[in-house]
Length: 192
View (cartoon, rainbow, N blue to C red):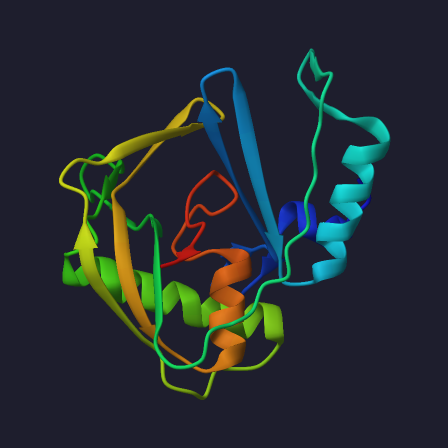
């Protein structure tokens, strides 16, 4: 699939963080799995769908004989946005330098996710966000789930959030995910 080179490494914010205009998640259901892929630029979704239909899906040495692709038109709901997903936020332990993953109910989680979201908006839209942004956790699962990416564990709790923002910010969150380490099966949001 031919996406712009910057899409693979991410677009750089002045803070040094990199953000991508895409997000995905993989869910396993017994002997099959589903991949959800979203992009701020919807033509990326079409490019991926066509590539999968032409070449099929190959993961490592496994080539899937049957591949089904569906494109869905996403509408950004008006008013408050209620979503759920595994949103990751972490701080580094100053002594060990290891990540400490935060629960959605912690105020630092909300602060980190909000700041991260504003930096992503500025990077991907090329201008600061000047609207209201309020992210409120409503519920979280009692136990975290560990996600593995490139032999590295990432921990997140499934949670529901209420988001107050304008349409461009809500579209950004629904297509590129929320929190850190998106594109590692984290941050993918579903409207509830």
